[in-house]
Amino acid sequence: DSLNPEDLWTWQDLLRDKGIDTISMPHNSNGSNGQMFEMESFKGDAIDILYSEKRMRNEPIVEVTQVKGTSETHPLLSPDDDWADFEIMDVRVGSRPPTYSKPSGGYVREAYLNGLTLEFTKQGNPYKFGLIGSSDTHTGAGAFDESDYWSKVGLLDGDPENRGSVPLTEENVDRLKEYMAAFNQPISTIKLDQGEYANTGFTQWGASGLAVAWAEENTRESIFQAFKRKETFATTGSRIAVRFFGGYDLSSIDLNSDSLVSQAYQKGVTMGGDLLNDNNKTPEFIVWAQRDKNGAPLQRIQIIKGWMDSNSGRPSEYVYDVACSDGLSVDPLTNRCPDNGARVNISDCSISKNVGSTELKTIWKDPDFNPLDKSFYYVRVLENPTCRWSTWDAIKRGFKPREDLHETIQERAWSSPIWYSPNETDVDVIPLGGTIQLRDFN
Image 1 (cartoon, helix red, strand yellow):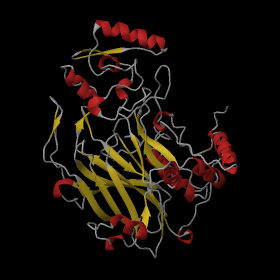
Image 2 (cartoon, one colour):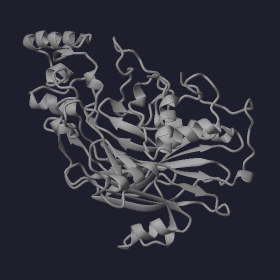
Image 3 (cartoon, helix red, strand yellow):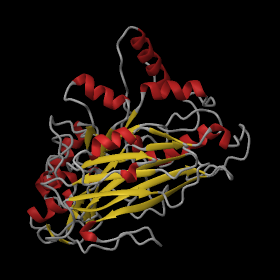
Image 4 (spheres, one colour):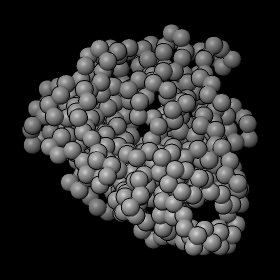
């Protein structure tokens, strides 16, 4: 046994030498206290190309969302992202009592940016991974639907009183104390306007996520290969479908053509792939999303870009809206869609009718593209707002939603990135010990 993940990768390499291919998928990085995506090895050594290659050979995929929160980004890491504060679990996994988990080093967007930094300094990129979602329930089934959320671990959070979404009764208090003591879990309560609530941390959990792979056929071999090439995306439980392609001649494709997907494969790369500089042309991206027929309509598609400034050596990020619902257009000055007017009636969780889109599809060019900057692009698709599971719990029991919890959420999907690289001769590499500027959020 070992706490060092490099020992796991060594074992995987040994298996691979015997003809047994495996991959590992990091889990719950948001609760790792910044240890999942560090800028040095587990032992504190400098990351080098061999380390980066070994990690990517064995860890090509990372879980970005599941019951114990979402690991895309954090408001402290992405303060200009209006959608960053989504199902944040801010405690360390398994800590007793619950202990704050440092954001930096625990979220995938920052890891992507740090990967560019390491690559820029010729250390390789150990964070060039694809994305999936997972359930992480321990009940034999995933609680994917906010309106039908039952629990993560059964007895401990199996009813709304235990998980803190409705006030406790005297009977519930005694039963909860018994359950928590049996599992050596601390218990506390909090008094709010409607009564006394369990304050166990279960309120920070979200509904289960889903993993999606674009595979040629529904076989273990084909799905495994899709994971290895990172042609995957994640959702927060809604069955949104997402396509994402990058290339230099995609604008010649008719978005309404029956052969759209096959042409995009021929002329570009898909999510998880790499684009190389082509005579300094600006890359084009095809993004296509379809709603879950049982979920809310789509509100917008966004592309999140991260890049390493080839002059300053500074990593940056930006969120672009690229497709808007209801025939609305992106404001070219703000790169934002107008408000589509979608609302939620908190008294019964009904949502606006005839607002939002069944499908969104577009071809997008980066308006700020610099051919010298290494960069990545990934898609985020947002549904119209709907009630969070805790709000559903409350209205079903005849209470108002708990005042210190989000009443609504926007279900979403994330694609694996497409990475852009200039020719090596286009970049002046800053040696180790140079002037690379790292963002400090600790």
